[in-house]
Amino acid sequence: MASAPSRRSLVAGGTAAALAAPLLTAGAAGAAPPGGGGSAHSVVPGADVAAARGWSMLRGRKVGVVSNPTGILRDASHVVDSMAARDELNIVGVFGPEHGFRGSAQAGESEPKFEDPRTGLTVYDAYGADAKKMAALFRKAGADTIVFDIQDVGVRFYTYIWTMFHAMVAARDTGARFLVLDRPNPIGRRADGPLLTPEFSSGVGLKPIIQQHGMTVGELARYFNGELLPREGDGGKAELEVVRVRGWDPSTTAQRTGLPWVPPSPNMPTPDTATAYAGTGYFEGTNLSEGRGTTQPFQFIGAPYLDYHYSDRLNALKLPGVRFREGYFVPTFSKYTGKTCAGVQLLVTDPARYEAVPTAVAMLVEARKYDGFAWRKDQDPRPYWIDKLSGSPRLREMIDDGKDTAAVTAAWRSEVRAFTRKRRPYLLYG
Image (cartoon, rainbow, N blue to C red):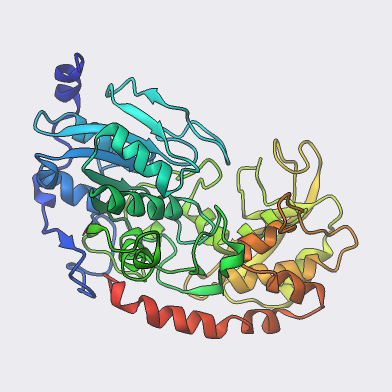
């Protein structure tokens, strides 16, 4: 690439070599993290660990990178820019998920194939690609090693983990290595919510895991490789490595890691959004606005037919770690564009006690009491979007039948216990 010398002079250096730490491969199950409690500047993402080693694990390989704007180093440079700046590395392509590699697309959109002006690399559109199409993209690029580096938010219906799943299957089927640059789960280790049933598999929930899985992408990759890939296609596992986060405690919130927050999607502007989204993402499956088109999506919830009683009723429940401020907002796009919505601003007062999924269920139960409430219709044979988000019709049917929050959440308690046991061998931290 003709522009490489000047680009390398600008980008070379990355993070300081003092961040160097050993890699953790897929075989090292359950190892405790070095370092400790995740105070500011003590948490080092896997990308920085790898960069400080000069990306040595990629030398001599034909490297494809699945990433988006969150794939940054602590100096705010992108991992692809850092890799492309090194003469000894051969980056053969970049694969962009939903919203695109550089993040220029809105929800449900992607960036078409293009040549990245900064690096000169070909960027392939991988959004919506299943394993077969992903494998074709990897073969077209000539990749024999796939690097995955995307900040997840810890929720089944956030699509990046399913991009990773398809990429892992494609890597296995093409004989490529799969390397995950791990990052903290911003909402921690808590596991909660219903298990997906296979009949409701979709792009917002492909395989049977619970809603709030409580794992990092590296841990999920290990889980996928051990539990799901052997039953996918012709079977077998991917050749997986995870570059572990250094110094992260799963009880540490994203706000306390000292790491910069790059929005992983346009409507995930802050870690506070991610904290709420684990539950209030449900409101995408209703005719209430989930706050898209406001400055606080998934924290503002409302509709023109709600009133101040909604916040009063929610606060009367005394849900742990949360308060509801009576709020009014006018979305600039998405549902109710240009119309005044009444509702609430969700305020997490104690992250350690806050329960995202039960809180959202309580919000749905109270909203269902309004005459204007409706579930969002879908176009395929499964007629309700909420069923895809929750993983089955059970949540919707129980709320429609007048069941209270305790009854609804009790329905999946055994599923959470079983998943928590099943994930245990694949955890890397804490």
